[in-house]
Image 1 (cartoon, one colour):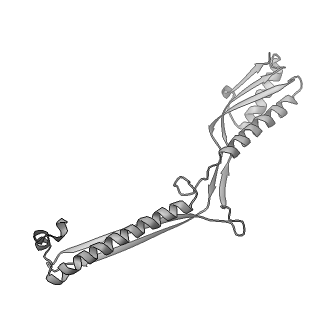
Image 2 (tube, rainbow, N blue to C red; image 1 turned 45 degrees about the horizontal axis):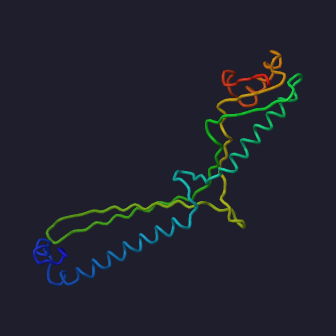
Length: 193
């Protein structure tokens, strides 16, 4: 190793005592780095795979699909009750799926080390460590939800038996605008075959 060659050690300006301790210090440094890496790896294995952010979001693919399908079915049921609508089918497109943000315990540690060497040199090192841990509810170990948002509807397609009647189409469009808070140009109502 180049670190132990006499030319390299002479450049460092180390005395005999420091030269003898250098291999031990390098070994301790390597062990410390290995332990930090294992600790970080272990912490990642213990956590649920979530994207980083101020609040964390756990995957909910099945729940989102169920919620979106349930919304379509509920809308079809409600629109089908409009006089003259007949049988109704509803298809929604979403700009963004619903999401749940969970509470996080965030901690940051800042450590500054200042060193003076024998030649009058000065070195300051600052190390910052951050960690984010999900807050779990007492007793059942499930994460604590901070905020839940519903899926954002981007457009609506309605196919209805009574869509040939302009009055029925107008009532459906108005109902959808109010229920989903979307403009009329994002709603298409077609007659059924």
